[in-house]
Length: 204
Image (cartoon, rainbow, N blue to C red; front, side, top):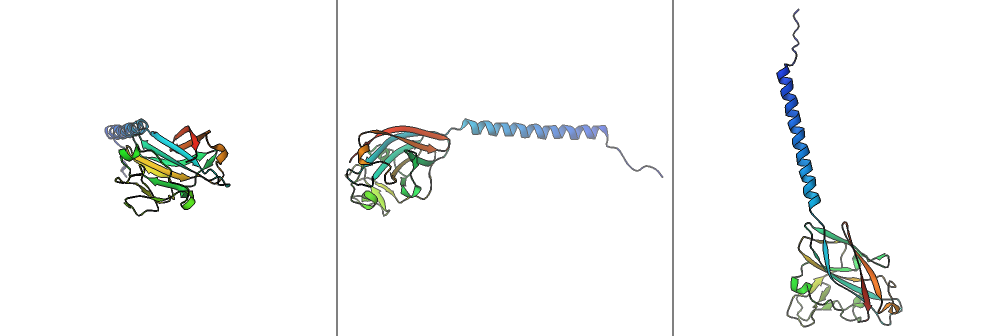
């Protein structure tokens, strides 16, 4: 009975090997290109202002702060922690506005008085331009969009080239009136970035 098995021809074998090598080489090149592009994109934030305020007589140590910054990197970044004296501010104590303009970003971050909820007047909006629970007209004169936000429940995402202002209430006792006038370190964590700076604690 004749042998019906046929061996693969050398030409076909060589062609299959060449095609396999081409596919493998293409995959390696695409992977390397993608890796290079990812590595060339940078995360960066620029902090414009930081303010820390302490109540001049609250025995429990009532304090608030505010930060304005801009995403100056190439990719979206996430502000995921604000740490003062080793204590992270809970997201529920963050009030984030990421829709502000360049003009508003450069306004002075102001304190609105201690008589409001949680020790800050949260409806300081002469023009009543928003309905959120936290609204502050930074120049106090009206006529322009105020900061307008509610308590946050998560980190603050900022796309490349965009701005954000975060007002935050510190955990009671983090600072006290005895700290007024001293420099205190603040750590802002955003992805792989940690921005460490110091600011003088003020009594508004």
